Image (cartoon, rainbow, N blue to C red; front, side, top):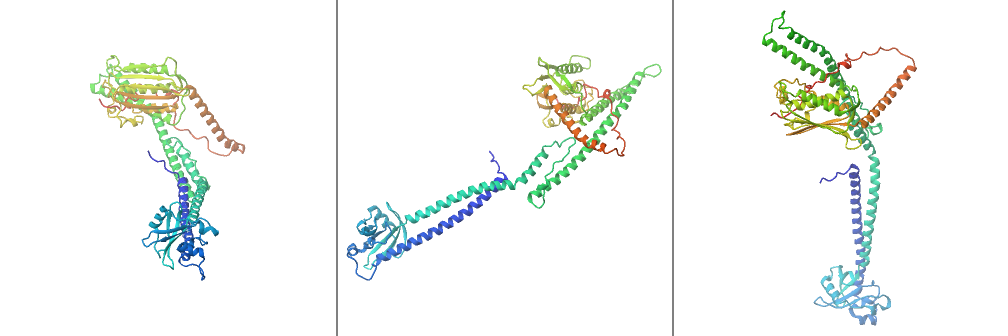
Length: 581
């Protein structure tokens, strides 16, 4: 499992806190070492003074009777030593022969002195320093840590002198604990303050990121796009690092906006050209078909001799190709109108009668050359209750015709084609219509392109592959593109899944209530925009009319409602990309 990456704010705060921690650790370590050296230096000075006292008695006068009776260790109870000071007399073999530990102060120091235990003497003998080696740290069981130094008295005895180091060790430990607590509190405070300060410093960068996010959510892939999002001027100051990023983003958005405008203008010109050309080509194509049919009917009469077989074949080909060209022109005109956003005639539509009529027409068209039974098996799976959507019945009928013609044309005889309609499974859910077949399926490398215009597989290039009749189907390669365009215009979506033995084209449409709500919201938004655009015009009218050109001429001639492309059962016979069989 990949570790979640840190944000920039987290990295900055962690870096700053880590730097502070390193500095605090260095300062604390140096302070502890200096304090350790200072305190143990003072302790060693005090130990050395005790050792000098053990070497020769103080003062020029004779020793008191108590000190003479105490022998070489009499200095231990003589006063002036810290509580817990000990003295030990070493023999020639290095063993402790006598010892005293001060357990009281004042006049009773000599009487309260007690000898070391055997365990303590053993520890002292193992770690005792030699004469002239200086002070050494020794741990005595039951007494704790000591600083010990060896001295030789005037009588020639070797004496070990030790004073406790617990006070110095405790002070050093307290210093370390205080440093650790203060450092931890400082790091915590630095983390909180750093988080706040870095958050404030990165606020302009977050605004730049928010602008980029809003731009990324815009539908830039199609249609007219007004790219008005920009980084505020406060975050686009080139004198700062964040401002440089904001200014660069603004320049990039300006270039992208110009490119989108140029693309939209180009698409508009192409769509207008396709619409105008399609409209203008319909008349000459109708004339070609009419004259070809008239010539074929006129031949063989009294005035015109019977044409030869070559002429008859040529006339048939002229009519066939004119029919195919007419279908292509009509499909192009329909796609151009859908691309331009021309509204459809929406209304409450029950899908079940449309499906029944479409599959009946498909079954009637799915007959052999001599009118035998249908070559495919056609099945219906419909619910008992009506399934209504807000749709244009004529356009949606064409969707069904294209999908069924796609299944009929590009699957071998004997294939079962099933059309099913499912109502919403939950409130607000979509209505689902599926066209399934158990044919050979669509190749995986061609599956992502089935809804593209003029997309055909190898089998479809034959214009008659898979029909079983050997006749040309007159495919335009636009049928599935029309399906996607019409379904998108209805606010739905179409998807395809295919594998050998199962191909499914699924259409999801919003139910009638949901579609009506969306339409009302869209109409309200359009009215609000129109009202906002009308305000400047009203202001200009109140200032008085000004000179200007007359109304712009509209685009090319637009066919009336009666000139809509006819519904044809073979309008996309070549769209289905199927595996050759």
